[in-house]
Image (cartoon, rainbow, N blue to C red; front, side, top):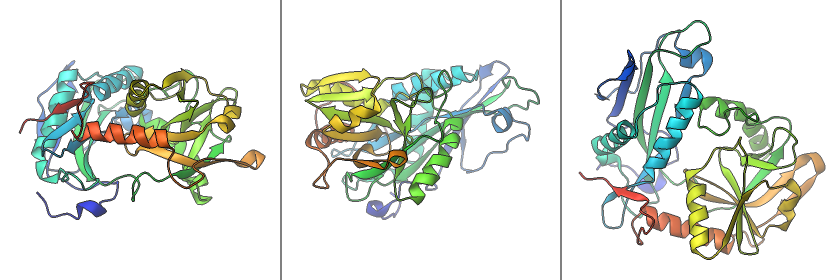
Amino acid sequence: MVNLDWGSLPFGYQKTDYNLRCYYRNGKWGEVEISSSEYINIHMAASALHYGQEAFEGLKAYRGKDGKVRLFRWDENAKRMQRSAEALKMAVPSMELFHEMITKAVKLNDRYIPPYGTGASLYIRPLLYGSGPEVGVKPASEYLLVVFVSPVGPYFKGGVTPVKIAIVRDSDRAAPLGTGNVKVGGNYASSLKSIVKVQALGYSSPMYLDAKEKKYIDEIGAANFFGIKNNTYITPKSESILPSITNMSLMVLAEDLGMKVERRPVPLEELETFEEVGACGTAAVISPINEIMDMDHNRAYKFCKDGKPGPLSHKLYNILISIQHGEVEDKFKWTELIEF
């Protein structure tokens, strides 16, 4: 194991030993290649650079209390990458290829898997892009699938810390019937304007409303939104929202706890009725929200009045991370042990 200050790791990129690469050429995927280089030679006319043919995923490997290493719901990440590839008319990696590359990447970099109890994990980033040269808007004929890993610390230092967010109306994350429901780089590029704007004002992330009517809650930055009231877990339903694997898991856990679950359009005015609200995703799992500021109407919605996460949000968080680290029975069969 490398000598790192595991407890102080940021959530960011850290160089590791190896990454995996596989090219799609002449209508088929080639052999998986191992590389120790952090760089890729790319054609200046690659379709990824000019026409945005690019998609990515993010998942984690966790070292458990028993010392074993687990992947969490990797198959859902693979299926989501397949949907992203199909949406952008790219070559679609098979489930088998995706699995082979992520597991090999973890094994080859096993000395970077953080120890149990440090709050850190090994982040896995599969990246698919059009590497073939095209001048003219059309799908590339060549693609590259890359998988690299990086040890990362917890998204929020000091545990699950409530955050402040701000509603934005002067930009949209994604268009109706656009690419909002797949994980492609363009969605994140278009969100940077709002992220920079609200962070300069002291908020952690923007809250987007639906692009068509600006009446319904859409997403929070790069995370899904949820609200809890009357023992009910409520999360928005929209064709422009990226289906979060964490959110999908939390809905199952909420039902298992005896809560009702509703996935439906959530009007903005419903905010004031929630007992707890939060954002969820791979990076932070759950990020409780203590304030949502509507700057256009000079109104602040307040939650977490004691500065702590709500009890149900905290319970859901603890159950999910306990499953990921092998601390409790995985009755949903969400984790897979990596055999070294």
